[in-house]
Length: 468
Image (cartoon, rainbow, N blue to C red):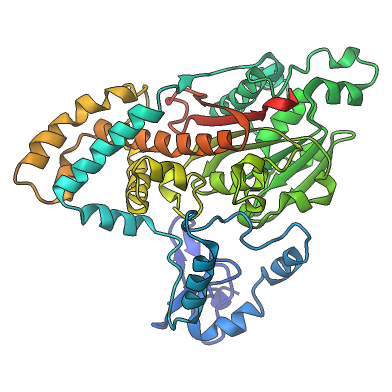
């Protein structure tokens, strides 16, 4: 049996790989040395790659094929419905012409997704004066639109069952995540979207009580992962209809515990938010719902906002942008801004009016990766003080002989880069807040936990004012 094993040595396990080798190799498919051919991402599942010459054969046999075929038959699947456009101010006819040219141009590739490496090269390719002007612009824009970001760390009484660990012992408990989840729900309660569930047991009709009490009968968690934010919401606030939106498959998720709750209806939608037409989810139609998301990475926040606010039905008028009247409120904890893309970003017009170009936006998103450079064991200096930190860079370096931006960046202290990164994060998020506000919702943007718990600690919350 040993002879039939793959000959790849696993040092951590102190043994050879246990898989069977390929018929013409000493190694299994996972460890067989790759050929010199061109490897490209699988169009069905980019998490793995395949030889270009074998693509046609692979696509017919990819393990995800059945899942993709099943998804495309769902009424709520609509490819790219929430993706946005590269330039919101273009005339649609011009855009159609450009699309046709791009499709028919030999060898043309999509430039929608700008990688972090492309952003880095663009920044390091700037002249020192242009780099410093960009920093000055970031400071000016931040000072203009990011004035009212307050600390709002809330531990609601309704979440005591979790905070005191009075829950099923089989459920995972990591204090930092529980504190974040509780504060998200506490901010929703403080904003009037949720109400404390204490006293529900005295009500004769629990279902009617919930409808009257919260005005919310369902929750949709975007980027749900294992779904433990929704688990806490269901445990502490009595939500009875749960929709978990997640494109990946997870083990050890909250679904098992949620399904054990009497009268709770759970539906998991395995789909990319970009392709989800929420209005076509039959079991959600007509139900007032709450949209939530904890650490929605990069453009997933923008895709979620479009998905909830039906932006694709009202491109010409933000006045009717809140077409989905069943949305009662939303809470999104943002993160990973370095992954943001201009095409997906909701507030392109707003930033453009502030003088930020598409290229500068990509530079700003790259700067956001610096926000986690510093030690977050204690809170960073207040963001408004960043100008004091960067004065030496702006005037000494930009006025001197230094021409390489990379040299300027190298001389910046970690805390300076981190504070600049947080400024850029807040600019991106405040643009999103303004877009949501234009859609007719009342909004707030807060720091919902100290940075020592999580440096990704910004929360966008909103509600329909005419629903409360």
